[in-house]
Image 1: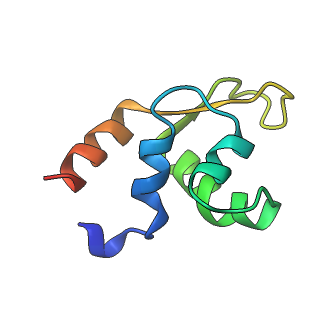
Image 2: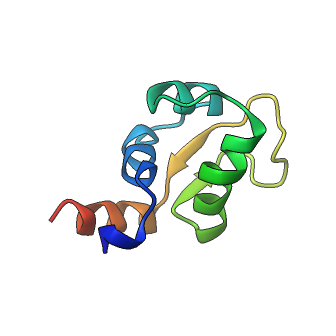
Amino acid sequence: LTEGLHSKVKEMLIAVESWISREELFENIGLSNQSKNRSKFLDPLLDIGWIEMKYPDNRTHPEQRYKISESGKRLLELINK
């Protein structure tokens, strides 16, 4: 399972255990807060549903925060086995 995941997926899922801003998330996993990193690392996890947004109807909300979803928690459990 872990062979098919990007190396940052596990780090990101752990970092979003509670609501966190994108800036804090990227800082915690050693990435700069740039749109290319959002597109490469965060957006796919949002699209899959492993991470959820606090304001899903407004991706650019000034108070936007991210948190691991239930399916993301299940994936993390599988990765950690």
